[in-house]
Structures are given as structure tokens and as C-alpha cells.
View 1 (cartoon, rainbow, N blue to C red):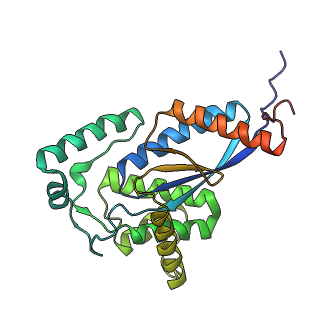
View 2: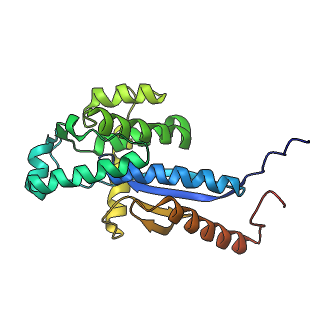
View 3: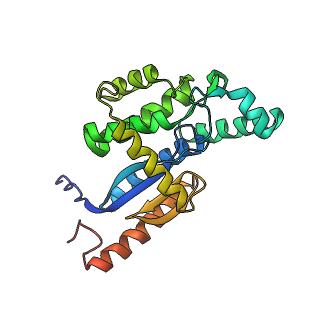
Length: 234
């Protein structure tokens, strides 16, 4: 019996994920998107994924604040605990062990978004994705304070690059302006997903929803460019 030939993957487009590093649904959404991309790869469709910044709490003090105090003021203690419990159950379905009990502070996330931009500068989209995963895991599963410069540098080294020594004021300004542009566009919740710069969906939708939406978007893009949808039989 002959071995099956490897499936050819056609680049179908760019997925932009707008997220915040302390958004648990963004972490869940990342996992569900990754599962969808594996399914779509079986169809011969490949996608680049980039991450762009959004701050859920842009007015958070630079050194953050007690998570318990912040959540109690925002939701009330019983509701906060109930929300955490729900997210923990959903996270387990995506192999995420949310440890909200380890998180002492809610940080200002601007510095973490600068780290993500620096990761892309250092190693392109692959390194940016590594940094996103490392930040989510550090904050949500280990309770590390991703608002602190020394913690961010440690996480960057774990992700495969060195963040800190050569970060410029221009990079901080770039990230701040990018976030402002997204906010001015009317975006007010994350995660939000774009395909080739156009709105695709919002929220941590099921993997099947990602698959269906991306198949439709890729087919539309292929028709627009008069390219065959599948690279396997081109």
C-alpha cells in the first residue's frame, strides 16, 4: 500500500486576534481557534495569525491593584466567585487549568502588550504567538504579575526572546496608538477576530463556529482572487 501524499496547504489569509492579556475568554478563544486551524489544515487551508492590543482596563494604575478588591467592586464577591467558577469549568474543556486563586493582582496590561509587539519584532508571528501563550499561561495558571517588567522579561526568555534591554519609547508609543485606533473604531470587547482586516466574529466562540466562518471567508477570498479554494487538487 502506497503512503498517502502529504496534503498541500494553501495560504488562505490573515486572522487578526484583538485581545487583552488578562482576558480569560481570550485564552479560551485562542485554544478554540487553534483547534479550528488544525481542522482547516486537513482541508488544505492555512492561515497566518497576528495579535493586536486592547486594554479592558485602560485606567488601571500602573502598578495594578488587588484582584479581589477590583473584582468585588466591579461584580460583587459572590458574582465574582461564580464567574471564576464558570470560566474554570469552560477552561478545562480546552485543557486550561485556570488558577484564579493564585492571582493576587489585576495588572495594567500595557507593558505586556509592548512585550507582545517586541516578540513580533524579534521573531515574527511565530514568536508573537509564543509570547501570547507564555503570557496567558503565566498569568492564568501560575498567578504571575504580568504588569511587572522583571516578570515580563522572565516570560519572554521562556518564550524564546529577550524583552527589555532594547525596547524603545517608539515601540511603547506604537502600541498605545494601535490600541487607541482599535478603541476609536468602536471595538469594546475581546476577543475579536478579523479575517484579512474585516470583522469575522466576537467572543470565545466554539471551534465549529471558527471552522465554518473561516471556511466561508476563505472561499469568498478565493473567489475574489479567482484562485482555487483547495491547494490539494489545484
